[in-house]
Amino acid sequence: MKHPVTNNTLAKFSGALLLVGAGKMGSAMLDGWLARGLDPKKIAVIEPQPVKSVKALARRGLTLNPKKSTEAAAIVIAVKPQTAPEAVPPLAAGVGKDTLVLSIMAGRTLAFLQDRLPKGTAVVRAMPNTPAAIGRGITVAVGNAQVSARQRKLASDLLAAIGSVEWVGDEKLMDAVTAVSGSGPAYVFLLAEAMAEAGVAAGLPATLAAKLARETVAGSGELLHRMALDAATLRQNVTSPGGTTAAALEVLMGRDGLEALLTKAIAAATQRSRELAG
Image (tube, rainbow, N blue to C red; front, top):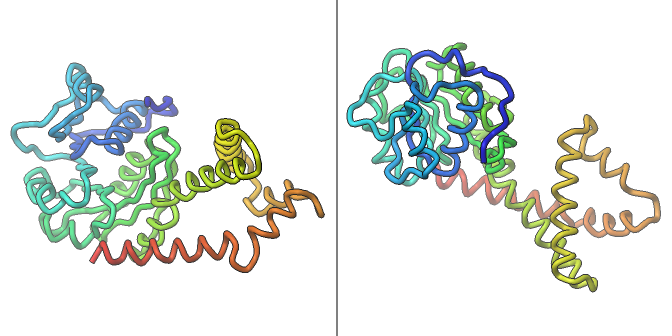
């Protein structure tokens, strides 16, 4: 899906940009960069199995699977984390003294990257989520001590092509970030799934129940996105004392209700993220 043109923050990008991995997330970033004015001629992509849209960009000047390494202003690593031990070391040939290396690989730490790249490389680790596919993701980033203010701005511009960007100073927080926003879309999809099944149990036809659940979750999310009010206030605004919503929330907000379950779920995901990172 193409991203809407919002501004041209990358139109003045100088140097070369190397994208390593053009799967779903890599392609989403690529689409966002182009929408923000980045010249395809400044981009090289390493992807053994490129989709048609990436192949088509080669006709606009994008370099696909370059045969030799050249120094890049930025290298964005978007391969699957299990391929990282083989994919990262060869990238050292394209790292210069001012090169920014930006990784969106889940679970791969700054130390992992630093150990496989030239000493002193500026490295940013980022965790986006799947709404990035439509430019509505949220990404949290953390950089090593070598990242300059200019490189941090560049990383923010590259990541903003797929949604909002936040920074943390402590890499240890990335495990909780992964549990909340990285895995979070699955929790929301599960909510829609469970609402639909509960609707069927209450007597609704399956097709109608699925549509009601889907549109309610999507519309509520958009309302939360557009309104300045926080989630708690929006919830309270929907809840009339003694009404149907209040009856449901009495169950959902009980001792073993949704909040308790999500707390356990996010704790489990956080712990698993720590285990995967080693």
